[in-house]
Image 1: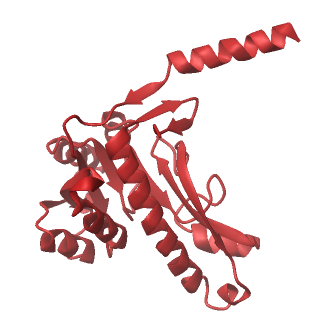
Image 2: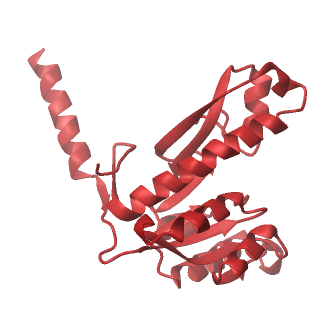
Length: 232
């Protein structure tokens, strides 16, 4: 009994010693770079929130992997600098990843938010901003990762699903979870292929992302043993 308790104490001590700590920017606000691939509804939620100085974060740039998308137009309407890196414009994926890393780094972000960004970030990017990349996913991770989270959840027959805000690591939707929101699945959701369900998830996702990014910006965070702690 004593040995088990002693091992638990040792494990907690090791976890605390290896924790990654990300204090808030002082003075604020925190600098955000947001990456988008489409309509930018999550981006708009962040733009609206950041208009209040009390939110504690400012969007300093928006990047995309394609031209002519609504997300870029939202950023331009808000007076936010934009940049585009299309994979087709680079010799290979690694060159694209390096260019994306350099463009984001030039804005000296405290946090990078992938808000509907449909490209997998490469090792150079993840290493450069480790512990500071925030992503949303339309399912309750670790269940149903990947690009078809809503459809996969419906196909499996779950009665509840939702969304997850998590940090990005080298895997696909495998990073430490920060917060989750639950959405009930209705019988009618199977008739329309999940479109209505996805819209309900997006409503919860917008609120959750705004809340999490604001708290990270104002309070900072600590990553310890796959758990993300934000000071109260």
